[in-house]
Image 1 (cartoon, rainbow, N blue to C red):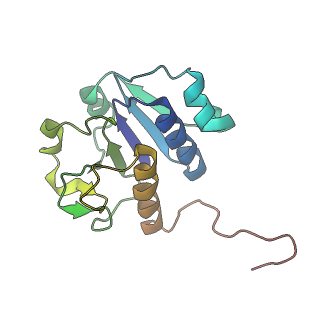
Image 2 (image 1 turned 90 degrees about the horizontal axis):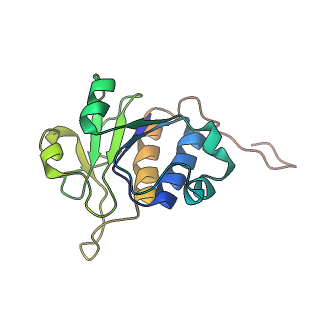
Length: 162
């Protein structure tokens, strides 16, 4: 799986998403410009000591991302979509893209992907969820649909085996 952040602005969100990516074997793609530098303490603090294990790739802009990932099937997370994130089928190599915290994904990009625009249902009294929460919600649905491929599925209590 792949998570794509379009012009992320808040380092803690990117750090949290990076930690989720490490936990799930997901690649993190970051499209510039970003509102911070990747070496900032706040990014690494949110990602804890997992940041060095993260497969993270950066791009100078959306066109650069498309050029370097020409066969990407991109699901665009937006409050403007008709389909929910649970209405679609995610291939095992899906790219799930999120926009910057203050503005989302630009509409001139969204209109090119009407079939793969997805939303998280929520009350109409709120604009959006936190970016790192949204990424986790949608990523785990995509992983569930793919049988949590290559992930540990069972835990164990000290004195009990399931």
